[in-house]
Length: 93
Image (cartoon, rainbow, N blue to C red; front, side, top):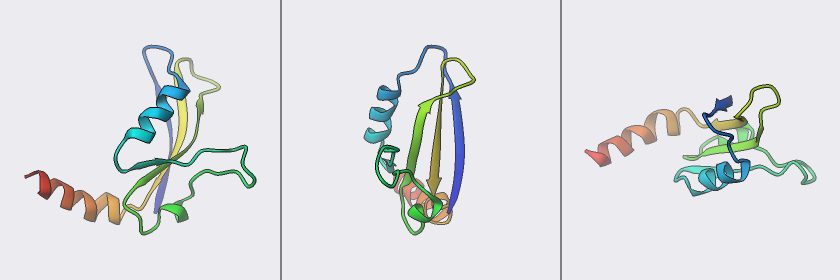
């Protein structure tokens, strides 16, 4: 599995809640983001191993950039990054 820390900057001030809703509505993406839980809930590369979906967590306003959100994404690069993408593209053709 692999992981990436993402910082996305926008033209207008982004809403963390709107971003959460968009992520939760996206097919093949799951939000795992509850740092108040004990233990804190956020995705690790191990959580994504052997799975088809990308997992997103630690969604928050960026502390440095204006109009920006920061979040963490993990996925299984062999399943989603190679095999499943090939199948999904073939289905579209």
